[in-house]
Length: 223
Ligand code: SF4
Image (cartoon, rainbow, N blue to C red; front, side):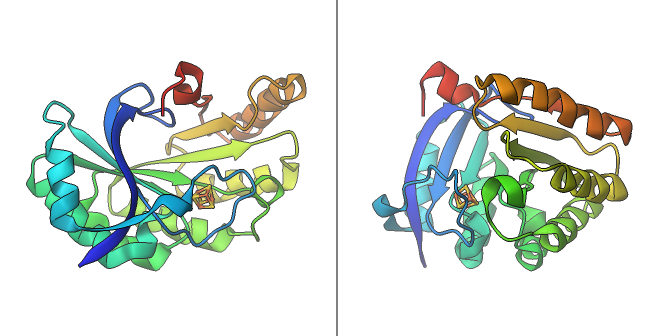
């Protein structure tokens, strides 16, 4: 079996709860969404077998975590399942970076995933249709399976209060202990800085802790 693979490389995890760690990145092609802020180049994908990807991963002997990202890895569910199983068998951890919408697919691969970085797409920011139902079902499946799952929300000045409150409601309804990372789209915008404080307060008032983290890899000038 082959899958669409954009690139395999070593870098610093720039987002989320494990920001700053060295990870191996496997970027898969294809996505089911079309976010306005997407910076993935899907034009450079090539067909690779599972063995070919695992051989590349094996080169990074001293890195423990493989971040499988995209695109949306779960779009290629059969390829992802075999790849993740192979990564685990090699003794490394599988870190899934996902847009958190393919809630049926995630149930098929939970046993071969160690960490889930799940996006919550705010319609006012990503310009996708509302995905509340998909996000809710996805988070319930991941959390109830006892996975190390956290939520990442990209916000811009255009983030609407209704969207924030909906995210607060869904996450808080599942578990208020779930870690939430707020990622500013353009961290240096003055208007966004004060908006970040307002958004953090909305989560905190509902009993949910949030951490604001800008993309570290961009700050460091690495991939
Ligand atoms: S989910 Fe991620 S890869 Fe897909 S369009 Fe949005 S930003 Fe791009």
